Image (cartoon, rainbow, N blue to C red):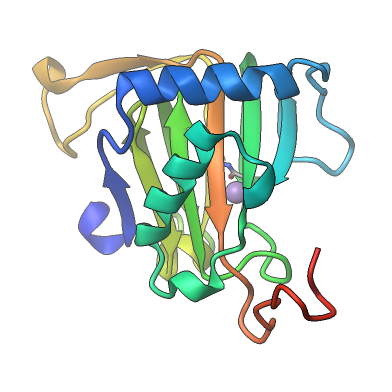
Length: 203
Ligand code: OGA
Ligand code: MN
């Protein structure tokens, strides 16, 4: 089982170090008003805080990145015009889940800020598993099989792994997950109409 079999795309260096620093500093003011939350009984995320901001309420730095990230969607007209910021503490983690098909469309596009992460994918109907490395400032895209047929988790702590399957010890690298801010965009579920500015669904 390799990346060729899983349509999870990872794109390096989608933002520069300067952009990362500016976006994080701008969002820090809004995030830091909240405490990190422990996992609630039905929740898959532990030690996190989150906010969602519609495009018109984003600082210019984050809006520029959001506009760039639209390019990762097949149909840009269906992109939800909002960004979900998920701030995971250094001891926070995201346990296995598949995002709700009711609330999220066929694409989930995630930019990793401040820390790299190891993603663990588990096939829903077999024993297949995969570890994938999402570098700091990269974007990964879940769609098709990686969106629906695999559950995903974001590991905490430090892990040594081999980026190329079957690689020897000289190939291994260690990922030490630190505090990480995910910049998350999604599209509308199939069948849900695109809200118009003047229509009843407008916010
Ligand atoms: C989620 C999720 C992954 C990440 O918010 O549903 O899986 O990389 N996030 O932040
Ligand atoms: Mn998810």
